[in-house]
Image 1 (spheres, rainbow, N blue to C red):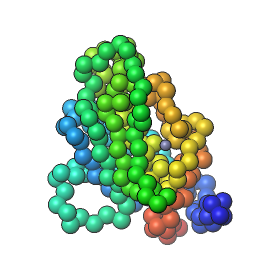
Image 2: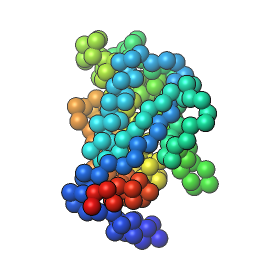
Image 3: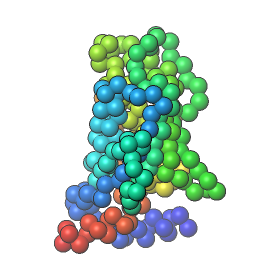
Length: 210
Ligand SMILES: [Zn+2]
């Protein structure tokens, strides 16, 4: 059943260069932080999610949930809660790994557009690696790691799947190297899943490209 579903949608989309050039309608991301993050961390989170998703054609509009007036209408959205303390200060040379870095809510087998990222767990996991960078670089490196965890969760929501890939942003568990390396992207298959699971937006793009 799942295979049929993917094949049907793959047939609807334009192929080749048209798909690569397509830009889907932006998705609204509502964010909330338990503690306000430094600007350098927030900027790095947003930059990293954009740089992972933009090559796929997916764009986001970022909104602060606490500043939202309640009558906004978005066709596609997700609500992201950053738990704990989202800054890179106070790191020590001993990393630890306890529990999930991020998680997306599921109800009766349905993936819901609500996701949480644990700032504390991400920091504790990468902190020994962060200490190898100069202090003024750490906020940006840490924010980028948070952005990668968020991109992973957004993959579950917008590809509408609980499945994982073998490599890249959609793989099941990350190493410190994955979170701190210079380059980290989705593989082609998961990029395609993100594109084909968005038929409404794709339908809007096709007529304009002809
Ligand atoms: Zn996952």
